[in-house]
Image (cartoon, rainbow over all chains, first blue to last red; front, side):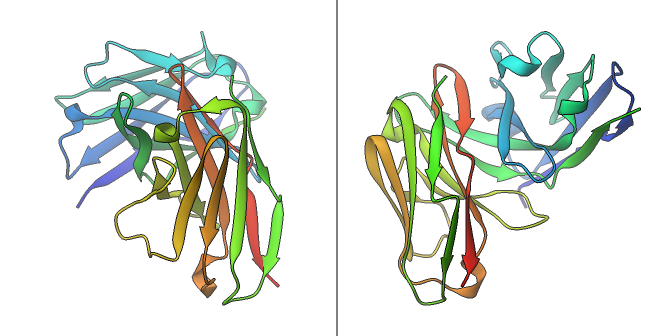
Length: 122
Length: 108
């Protein structure tokens, strides 16, 4: 079964750090781009970051650039999001998602984890 | 950044009725890179449509997508009770992804 399982969420003070993990199973992890998407309480979806199959390309939404770092370990079938200098507005459920991407043909997220909750508060 | 605006914000319909959800982009979007998702309370989003009009695996044929350029539509031909949820459109361009703010489809 194709599956993504996030972990690492929790309560952190403003200015603190947290590292999220996403464990992939049931598919060839190294063949896919991967994404992090978040959802603040009662709000819509917001894309956070993307990473290419080999980790050579990474892209971020402007609001997290310089604070968050996406990475992956293909040997461990795992995706990560290192979050530093956290702010109250980073409070959200964070989902990892598998990206199906072929230039000029399609881009979509077809497998999602259940999410992990990050709360930034003093 | 391309902004996606979905309308209406809330759509109140009855089971069996037809639902038409709109997604308008602030500039032209490649149809290849336009997708729709459904999200129910407490659940992760679920892919419905990709490439503007292709149904994802396992999605019933009452769901259809259309459009091009700046105007895209998700249509649910005959609403079933399980279709009441929030729907998001999503685009990819210039290595960035944006989502619409969502349309809540509620039971009338």
